[in-house]
Length: 293
Image 1 (cartoon, rainbow, N blue to C red):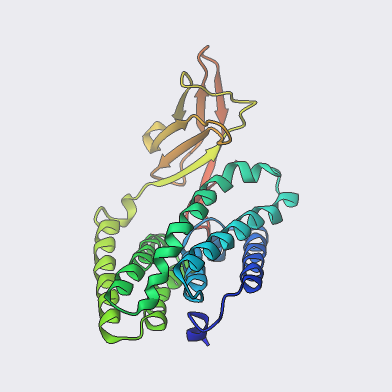
Image 2 (image 1 turned 90 degrees about the vertical axis):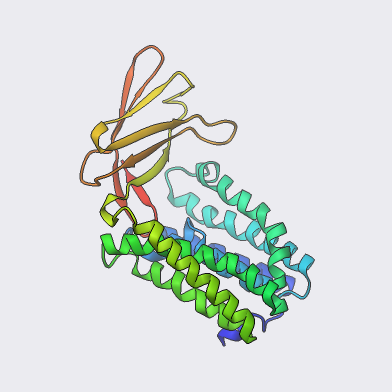
């Protein structure tokens, strides 16, 4: 059954649209209904599950241009639906699109060349192994980050870790059928795993900083380059200010060492007026820290 999903289904346009709608609706509902701290929430904001879903689209297409177009349309339909489902139930309303969708829009654009190139994993040769390895290394990268979080806050991120690492052998075995391409992809994956584990843990698991960004109310805080920002507890980390342009909101990025210490920030305008924004940073099931005001 799994092998059929990865190359045994003709991805017609009706099937593609249905697949995109179902993916978007389920992801939006997961973001709404799954409690904080659950790994299933990560599908709404991180890439690992979408890497696998995009590959499913690609390998069920007959030509590279078809794969490019259908992957693009798949993301063009599914990603806006993720936020459209949440709009009636979120205080940001359609502001969700303004703050979150630009990130996914650029990934949607990237699927045009990405889908075209990815189609060649169907060649089942060394070129296919190298192309597939790009996706495999991405999954290993995400999995290694989740593993570090799992070690720090067990059993959180267990599902995320297992999904990322478990997807690697599944993709190798279901997409590549010849011995040499499988060995190449497996070898690259093992090497990537070793390197990423070393990089992830070389400073010690307890020395990793937590980083999160949150948007600012531009009417309340009309920030410009003259504004300054500082962390409530400077000894616990740093805070930096991003000045948004166009549809992108201004934002504050906070890096802290200890989640148990204050993470609020002070904004200072050019006239010296100071504004305090309280914030608590917690790790949730999205694979990234989240801010609770």
